[in-house]
Amino acid sequence: MLIELNNPATFALWCLPFVLPLCFLVAWSDMRSMRIPNWCVLAMFATYIVVGILTLPFGVFLWGFVGLIAVLFIGFFMNAVGMIGAGDAKFAAAAAPFIHLADFRFVIALFAANILAAFVTHRLVAKTKMTTLAPTWDSWERTWEFPMGFSLGGTLAIYLILSAVFGA
Image (cartoon, rainbow, N blue to C red; front, side):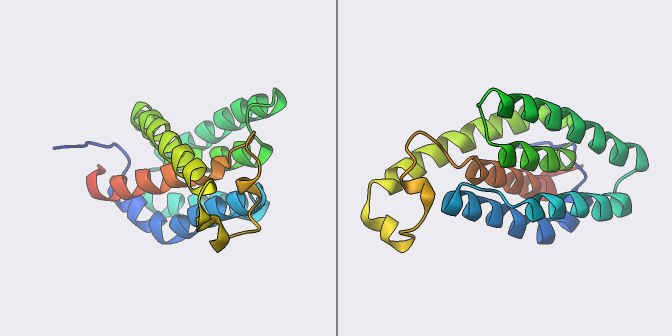
């Protein structure tokens, strides 16, 4: 098999209709206003609780909360030292339970590739006339900041799609 992921395919399939729109909204909102709405983070968390309790083995479901807490602490530290925004930290924490611990290295590599592609794409588009399609977006003007929701949302979406196809 080309890719072998440990995330249960059934879990990923049930999550996709709820998580994909949220990932899109997070990316769009972060590029538009450099903010990730709290309701998106709460909706992600609620999706994990509802879909997770129905589709995951109970032990795996509980380990998701360990991932959430670990990423939340790391994210708050990174926010405190100015590395990322608070919305990025909260969204990453809400996304963490959707990622199977055994797939951590794969997701880190996926995120690295995604952030590079998102950064280059965003910066190139910001220098073209395509910005007239969304002229009021804050991220076009903030050259010292990057809308991480663009790559965070994209990474989670890609991972869940791959999990639905190649998952356990």
